[in-house]
Length: 251
Ligand code: NAP
Image 1: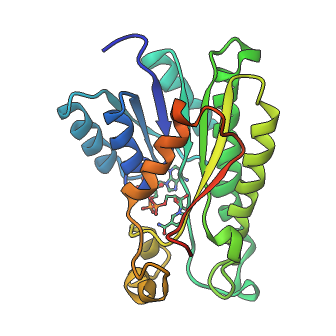
Image 2 (image 1 turned 45 degrees about the vertical axis):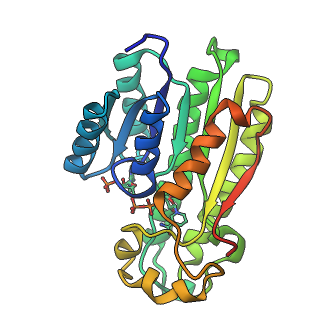
């Protein structure tokens, strides 16, 4: 492997959309840091798969909602490869379907801590390493928002939708803040994508139940979202910053 090979860190890389980004990133020539929260086996299996394909990857545990974990995660990447070129803020959670008048404070704090504060902390560590202001060589950040930020998820999870609204605004603000420092910051807004997140929100049948109501009559795949993310990371998107790309099948 070349010492000049670019390094990509993907939060929540062990499954779903994040795992697809890790696979496509490795194919595109990145060394890939696969972050996970709990499922070490899935992260290690993905690392082995990337290595078997001739790529280079490491698994890095860390809860993005913990500042100490985030700092430690970036230090592992520093020690492993000594550079960082790209961050995908993908880790995110939903909770069970509920109205606002049923939501606990603990639920709301967890939602905002993981989905919002986690993305801010990871972006902060990336900017500290990539910004030319700090002696870095520039880079790219892609935040994973959701189509929910545009429609609000009434009666299902307004907390999740609002956390993604914060990600949209953060994308715009940070993009402008670091635009002269070699860093581009963009976001994707996936629609209904067929991953395990729906089961973790207590609705394993969600995709099957609603896919006929979607404009394309089908859910999207993790690969379809990952391809959009890889485009925004790439030099092909060199004049795009602060952009929010819907990958929602028209939803
Ligand atoms: P998923 O299948 O549930 O996978 C979530 C990933 O995030 C896993 O790798 C998980 O790691 C990791 N993770 C969870 N909490 C974490 C934490 N606190 N710190 C670090 N990693 C954490 O999710 P997905 O459907 O691929 O969603 C990925 C992103 O896309 C999320 O931001 C989600 O909001 C967004 N999105 C998804 C959809 C959809 O329909 N699927 C639609 C719009 C937006 P472990 O396996 O170790 O728990």
